Image 1 (cartoon, helix red, strand yellow):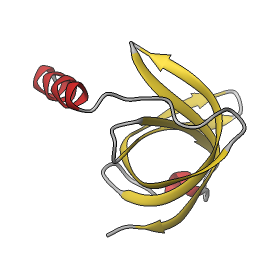
Image 2 (cartoon, one colour):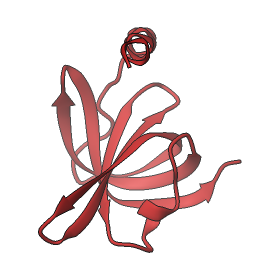
Image 3 (cartoon, one colour):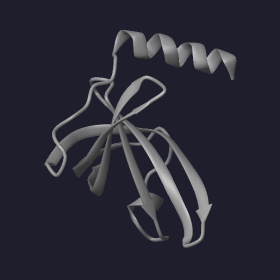
Length: 110
């Protein structure tokens, strides 16, 4: 786990994350890679937190719930062409991230 954290920190130092777009703006994010997906159980069912990165190292966060949604399509390490609406600009542990909604997967890359 420590090795993974050190590798991640070194990679981020080479390509720091920046906010993308403006709130309420619909964007074509191009090819993004799903870095991690974590499920959280709540009062209204399970919700998945998806952490994507684009080719420039920008972090994109998308929350999705419900089975049969796009949340079930991608697995960690998958790359896909997506569009989404910027919900807000956020910061997590010093890393700028863009939170999006209404994410649409156009095509899954091989």
